[in-house]
Structure formats: C-alpha cells, structure tokens
Image (tube, rainbow, N blue to C red; front, side, top):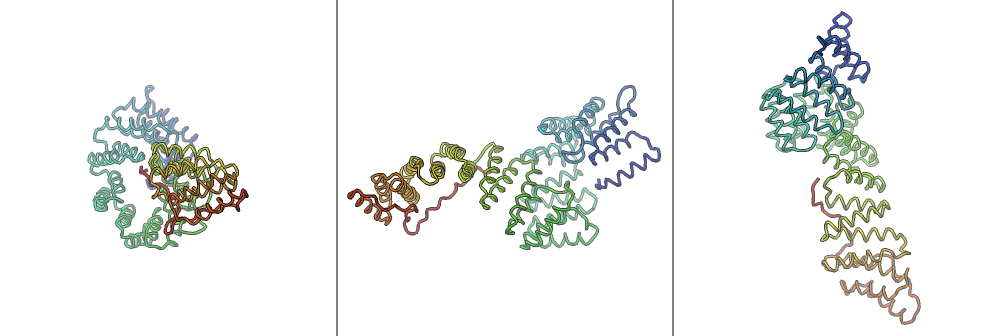
Length: 507
C-alpha cells in the first residue's frame, strides 16, 4: 500500500528463505513479480500455489481470489487479466457469496478493451453477494465516471458512502467532483474523507488542494511549501500543486519549473491526464515551446478515457498546429476528433472543412461544407466554405472553375440579407470581375459583376471607375488594362473579415 515494492519483495523472500512455504506467500511473491512485469515467473508461482492448496480436486477459492487480486493491481499493461478472470470464475463457483471475488473480476475486465459490460456485471454480482458492499458501488461509479455520466456516478458514489459511512474513497471522489463546482460542499466531503482516514500526507495534500480550489492560491502554496519542508517532502504530487498555484499567481517561470520537474521525474502511475494539460497551459505562454506543449497534450490524450475530454485534447492540439501554420497536422487531429465524435457540432463540421481546405484536401472540404449547408441552410458558413474551397482549387484563376460556386454564394447572400452581407458580396464580385475581365476576357460579364457591386453600394469607387474603363474599351474594341486582382474597397467603417460559426452543440 505504500508502493514499497522492494520492501514487499524482501519481506516475502525472507519468509521463503526461512521455510514459510505457504501458498498465500507464493501468491504474494507472484504479485510482486506481476508488478515487476515478470508474468511468466508470476504464473509459475500462482500455479504452484493452486496445486499446493487443492484438496479433493477442489482449488482453494481464497488462493484463486488472491491471484485475481494480484493481477487486478496496477495499470492496464500490468498483469494477465485473461488468466486472472479464468481463476476468478472458478473461485466464484466455489464461493459465490464472496463479493471480493467479483470485484477483482470486474477490475480485471476493465483492463481489457471493450469489456466494460462484463465489468459492470461483475460489480453488480458483488452487490448481490453483499448488498451493503461499498467498494462494489464505488467501482460501478468509476465506470460511469470514465463515461462522463455524472448522474450515474454521483448516485453510485453516494450509495457507497451510505452503505458504509467510513468508506473514504467515496468521499474523495465526491470531493473531486464538487471541488470545481461547489467549494463549500466539497469541503464537507473532504472533512468526511479526513475523518475516515489515518492522518498522513494525503490529508495535508488534499487540504492544500482544497485551498487552491477555493481560490486561496497563496495559502495553498504556503501549505505545499510547509509539506515540502517537513515529513511530506517526497509526496509525489506536491510539485503539481505548486505549479497550479504559481500559475494562478502569475509566476509562469516557477510554474514551468515545477510542472516540468514533476513530469520528467515522477513515477508514471502518479501522473494524471490533467497534469499534462497543466503542462500545456504553462508551456504555451513561452514562445518556441509549442512542440513541448503539443507533446504534453498527446500524453494527456493517452491517459484520458473520457470521450468528451479526449475530443477537447484533440481539438486543442489542432488549434496549436493552426497557430503554427501546420495545416496537415491540424487536419490530422481534427479528423481523429471528428471520427470519434458521435454528435459533431456545427463548429466541428466547419473546422474540419476549413482544415481540409487549408491543407489542399478539397474533396473532403467540399463534403464537409456541403454537410454544413444541408444541416444548417440558414447559416452562411456552408455555402461560404464551398465558394472558398472552389477558389483555392483554382489557385491562379486560369481555369475559372470557381465562378459557379462564388455566384451561388453571392445569390445566397443577396436572397438572405444583402445589407448584412454587403462586404462579402462586394468581395466576391471583385473576384468575378478579375476572372471575367483578365482571364476569360468576357467584358460583358465583368460589367455585370460590377453592376452587382453597385446594386449594394452605389457609390463604390472601384466599381464606378472600373465600369467606365470597361465600357470605353468595349466601345473601342480594344483590351483594357487588367482589372485589379485585389479586393475592391468595402464601404468605410466596414470590414470583409469572415468569422467562424458559433457552436450550437457543446462537447
């Protein structure tokens, strides 16, 4: 429990050296070997323990359960869950009223991909075996916590502490949930946690964490420094808390120093996805550190299993690449986000289309902007994106292939609200003037485009002057000087900047 694996190994080895050949001690040593990644050696210990404890062809369910617990320990890469579940199923047949067997079975199922339903069933069976079992309810809450289902996980965590008012882990989860939502309620759960645990560095840390959540950053920092100067100097997450405090207090250099030290030296099991996100938040304020910031987000993504949070990380990585002008990487991450999002918002659709257009993936861009226009026909961004993509396809305007899409865009804006979209209409007609006059030499079409500008802005100097030039040239039958490729001037006080859509669906 103190994460002193060498100490546990020495204790078991001493017992074995002194002739304590009890199967449960062999399982204990197998547990250590499992945590050390020595699966084959561990299995030999487990099998020997099973053989030695089997009586009248029946295995000892306590030994089988201990093997299941050993493999349930550690992260998803630790242990052999398939082997453990096999043994635990046998144990459940022999001792169907032991809830601990089903809990260990559920934890092992959670180590396997796509076996959440089996884990849910195992934890539910633990409650059937012991209706007052707080640990099983807590584990069910953890399943729904990973899914972001607050209604379900809060229900299970509250049931856990109601079943056993001394069950500290339930209070800690409730504290964590309310810490960023209701600091007063969070404090109540923190007090309950402290009341039901032995006084140790964890208690001091969670109190310092509470001070941070309550906005008392200096007090939180002072508490962390006091821990660092005393018996809790080696508490693994102190530097994370200090980084949070320094970041909120505006000391970005100290925040960077603490979070970088933690992320580079901490045991991987002590690092949470939020720690890497903090690393990103701190590093992004330092010019030239964008790649480090992105690497932190990628590591946060690896650790986080909550779907909505994973979308956030992917989209944030994409936004950093957007600032760097790396369109291909931005597109890659937005495609990943979109592919795993069951309910993309209008902003998600637009961003993927925009990223595809900038990266030269015009077919994808067309499909996304067409989808946008179909789903949100009264918003400008779909048809606007189609026009922009068409223009990007015809890079030097020699083909003139963007003309139909640009004309559709103009007609949509005129039909909706030509005053509201005046700037965009002028800009798009300016593009058509250039194509018709300079590329296609269709002066009549160019003149019609200029009339379109004057229809929304009768005093537009560009349209008035260029119309006169083209009319004179048409009368003389000679080619005019090339119409400007630049955007015609918009009315005073206006801009021609296009904004992105607001999202209609929060992630």
